[in-house]
Image (cartoon, rainbow, N blue to C red; front, side, top):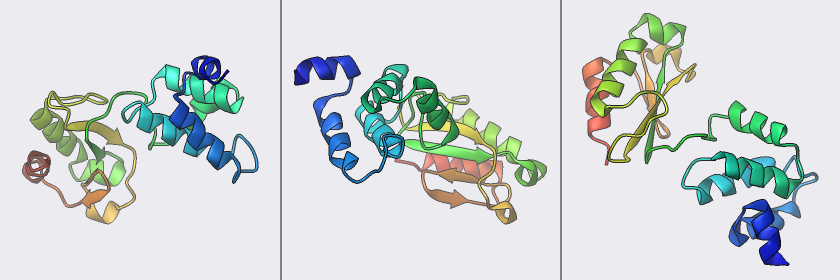
Length: 164
């Protein structure tokens, strides 16, 4: 029976077990959605293909539209493959006025990628980000969890070149 249930949901047994263990601590299936998506994203190599989203919806008995809504709302869930490092370049008003678009072009040019693409070596993916919440450091970007502010195109290129 466990094998047929696994096939039906598309989730491997370790993900289903992790969700089952957490289920004891959450009042509803919807409350369990965020951690379940994290488990699935980890299993699928850092992103959530349609198969993963549908599998989580089925496992939690939630409408697929609800799960898609959460995945598309939160920046921490990815619907495309991502690199080992995620580069977010702010292009909101403060950053745009101080060269945010030039920073984005410099980073994309150095890595040879566009939005939601992964560099050929699998190292980086770049996203244009609405606001990183540090306008006083404009223009800025965030690499993984580290902020880099008051950037020039040259400094931004150097930062991504130095990533391992």
